[in-house]
Structure formats: C-alpha cells, structure tokens
Figure 1 (cartoon, rainbow, N blue to C red):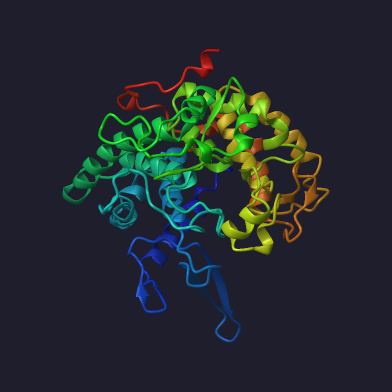
Figure 2: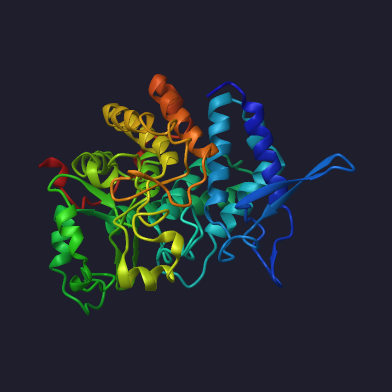
Length: 414
C-alpha cells in the first residue's frame, strides 16, 4: 500500500529460506513444507552479524506447529503479485517449490472422509488450547483462500499441473462442504434443533449425527432472524457453534461465502454489535467459555480466562479484516463505526495487543503494548477506507464454476 514492495519481497524470500530448514521437535521430523510460526534475530556483537532463528513449534507454547503461516505465505505472495504486477517472483523455481511443499501438506490424502483439513488445537492465531481441534473455521477459510491464490500462480508445467488438478477438485468439495455444513442461520438452526439421530445410509439428513440436546442455550438468543455465520467447527457428533472473527472475514474475502452468505454475516455483525464489537473491535471468538467447561477445554489456562485473550478477548489487529470484508460487501459504514471506536482508545492505551471484558472495555491483563500488528491493523483499515482499490490485493472474486448446487437457507430474503 505504501509503494514499498521490496520489504514484502525480502520477507517472502527470507521465510522461504527458513522453510528449507530441517524441522525437528525432539526426535520427530516435521513435514517439509511447514513454515515457521515466528522467528528471532540473534545479534553477534563480536562478529557484528545477525542470524535469523526460526520457530516451527519446537519453542511454541504447547509445542504445536503452525498450520496457518504457510497459507498466509501463499496469500501474501499473491498480494505482492497483484499489487506490483510483477509475476517474476511467483514464477521463480524457489517460490513454485515453496507453494507445492505447502500444498502437499494440505492436499495429502489419508483416512479423512471430509475435504476440510484436520488440525490440532493451538495451530493457528488461537495458539493455545481452546477446543478448536478438528476442523476449525479459521484454518478452513485460510486453506480455501490459499488454494485459490495458488491456483492463479502455479505454473502448468510437469510438476505444477498435477497440483492444479488436485486443487480444482478440492476447492469444489471444500466449498460445497463449508457452505452446506458450517453455515448457520435461523432456518438452519431450527432444522438442527429438529434433527433425528442414528440415521444410516446416504439418505441421512443429520449426516454427522449431531444430538440436538448438544446445542448450547446461548445460540438461540444470539441468532437473529436475519443474518448468519460460519460456525467454529463441524465433526462427528460435534458442532462448535461459537463465532470466530478471522474465519468469517476470510470466508468473505476468499468468496468461500456466497454473496448471500457474505451479506448475512454483515447482517449478524450489525444485529449483534454489542456482543461482537462492543467498545473495541473485534471479538476474536464469541462467547467465552466459562467455569467447568473452561477447566476442561482450556486445561485451566490462566491466560484464557473468560472474556480474555483468545477466550472472547477483543483484538485490534482484526480491524483490518473487518474493514476489508465491509468494503467487499458494500458496507463501509460498519467499518467506519468500528474504526471510530478504535481511534478513541488505541493511542491513549498505547496500542495494546488485546482487550478484556464482555464489551472489550479493559486493556488485557497480560496485553503487551505498542504491538506492531495492532498498529498495522489500524493503518491498513484506514488506508483501505481511503482507497478501496487496495482491496484487490486481499480479496478474490466469486468463482462462477463453484456455484453451490443447493441453497441451504433463505434467511437473507426475509
């Protein structure tokens, strides 16, 4: 956005070099394509040299390898290409190989019967145990977006052609699965509420054998008549009905959400403004898990107490994703309202990492200040509003070939 693409290019190439490192945690070797979660710069004062040391999960809390960083790398490569018009970087053998290595992890075949990507807890932005193991919306939306970005950049040579074919098949299956089974609105909630269980064969309506009694009480109050969202997780006999901001915003930007679903997500944000935005954009997840459930799900994690950190905390960095989604859906006024809220607090509070409380009124109890991503999230949001043409870097138009065969809901016609 600032016309300084060399910084981005250098970052892409440096992290690509780190991907090539041998990755071991204890005596176990990680997949070749894993990108680092983070890295440090170690300075040698004697030799006056800097060395980058990557963390692939061996230093992370809980020792979990990141799934999202590889997808973000592909998305950033496409953003660089779109912004500069420079195709040469993406077409280098190094970048082509880097993409293929990341994709080979996501596209690998196993015992799974779903096109979604099976993930451990703590593998994404929510990097602590929060009960997102299984098929978290955050990863599925990023996976979908990375597949679409890679499709536009992979060469159709001997090595790339096979990946292109696999991506096309996976995208069709993934879009159908997500739009059908992860989508929740008033009508769909009512259908799940009336589900019959223990259904066999292809005629089963309740395909994942979800017990209606497992629907939490809060969902019935939270769900507006008009609006909807992609829920947190769907796996056998389990639906995580929580709202996750990153997954829903990325679903809009990647066109994983249909235009109708994108509009419904915006309707939900407007209808549930107090719960999802409150006094500081934006709740990373909603609602918080509490009491006995908090003890079991988080392992009594003191950082993830209710309405704090990943457990219902508010993260200013998410402001740019909300703004991008607002612009794409033609609702810039929602973004302006959110930015106004952030401006009233962020500078005064020294740009903290996150806020606590049901409304996000309090600076997070362990929040570090002057956080780069809190500042960058705000700047990107402002720049997107001032010049919406920047949206093309991070937004993908709907692929007409992936039009859903069925529409699961008509809540948006109310």
